[in-house]
Image (tube, chains in turn brown, red, blue, yellow):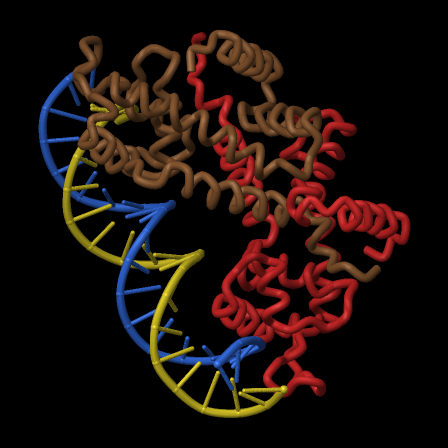
Length: 162
Length: 162
DNA sequence: TATTGTTATACTCTATAACTATA
DNA sequence: TATAGTTATAGAGTATAACAATA
């Protein structure tokens, strides 16, 4: 054995890849309020019914206090809109504005390109494998949800909706 | 489309999985100086020639100033040892102590078990796939290095060295 | 002049608790 | 009593610059 054993560690590999992706994403979304997190908020709002701040925070894996700051910035930039939830006056619905929707489309394209560069060491089929495996883990291993997500990605690409 | 589009995002999936792994690792290595980072230092020292603090910092992807604090703690706990490099009096060689080596073995076993739980949604073959793909990306896509790492993992497990 | 390791400082994130207004 | 959102504060983690010793 000549190589340090840490390279066999899943946590080490995950950390390195995640950090590398974060650096890439930061470059791509530079200027966007909230950085990569801000992008994820926009993506979390797209293609679905309006969501509460709390629901959004949970999908993104951040505290609800962080969501307040993020949305303050994004709303200030005119990318999202907060409106009271008619069904529950404690909650607020968050929506993507026209501007935000357009911005999201461009960012998704740029990010996809940057990611392909990041995944360059892998064959195209392997990249899809990695995406699929990580998605299944991230959605909680629920095979049905994972399958649904995969179908929607294809749909999205076929649509040309973005 | 009913599910938020963020779930199709690689950065989102990577982030969620990496955070989940970090939480798991923090539980497992609780009490170890430096937490998961401290474990990675120990793993980085195992099965190789003594390494300088800077080399170690680079593999772990942290600043060299962080390495100083980490090693202060680990050395204080008697897990590693710093000695002057006879070939370069600016540098210091970092070595695993007997205690550190033993501690590492136990931690590796516990971590492996915890990781299997984390990867439970995937079939055994898929877990290996994911590990392999992430490793190849993390070592920089160098297929030779990646292959070497994979061989060493098998060797390690066959060895029963830990 | 560049590099290794150390120290001190500042900045960014994150976690926590407290507060309001609703349910 | 519990929940959604906000605000303020403290802590961890990280980045930066400056320094001494050596190459």
